[in-house]
Image (cartoon, rainbow, N blue to C red; front, side, top):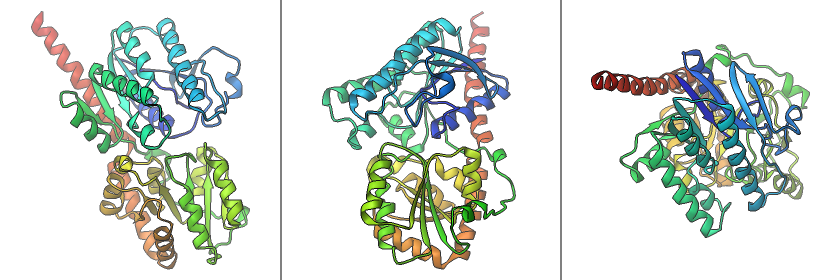
Length: 419
């Protein structure tokens, strides 16, 4: 059975969708499927084409045992809506022609959204390749873009909504990253088949026994008894990371409490300026680092902070950074309401929840954790067991594979009857 994954984001880039799709693709390949990937020239999050791919229109390579087709994409540093539209639609066009000319027929075409516009290419290629379209929704677009204020043009929003509805109706299967996304789509399109394709963690990449290392901590000048709080991920609009700096301002007299932010993104410059204006000596920024180095560093911190803005939209969100921190037995300070809180705080008891964008509440929870360090070790162990039993990629891929195999068995049976 042949599957083509169409996505703007894929390794060697780093990030949540890149890792999620790679984990799914390699496991499907290992279990007898023939998987290929059609993606953009690597450029994210710096929005600059990686050196080995620079100046090229098309690159075919093998990555992790997968055949990966890279097509040209426009990149630019501007944050304007025009620049983003050029970025999205350049790949819509080049991926269509690359898929048409370079890739043969496939049984299934799985398209990652956002960007929603890539669904145009997915629909056209699914018809050309006689394949069934699987539309994988990791973020409800354009709803999220509108509520975050990223897109304000009413005409563009209406057109995007029409496209979203068209793609859902034309998909054989719609998969959603969270139960919130699945429930949203199911309520609006009751006749469609919707599947919860969870995010998760490759437990094989996490050592069974967690060995604490002080190398990174000491190298950066942190003391053994410093209470280190970490945010690692995209420094973007949705995360509402100002709350961390405002909390640091409230706790500036607690000398042993330190805040670490690792990553890059569109609002990093604003946060660095805020740090300078507030004279926050206990806040430290580091650039994106390779996953192996990040995992080693996570072992040295005390608590992971995972925030999002206080929007109803995010009550169905599950930030992917939750899983690696839990797999490394790090307790959470979760500033996300709804599904994520229900799963990882209420059910798993893997940390504490704070009110999104509420710096005082976050400061109060940090003070409690700093005092009760033995309790947060228990929370870290709880999180490890919960994510191992419920969100490991071997289990997730098996459930998804069974959906496809069930469909193939059903069609085979029909063919026999018709014959």
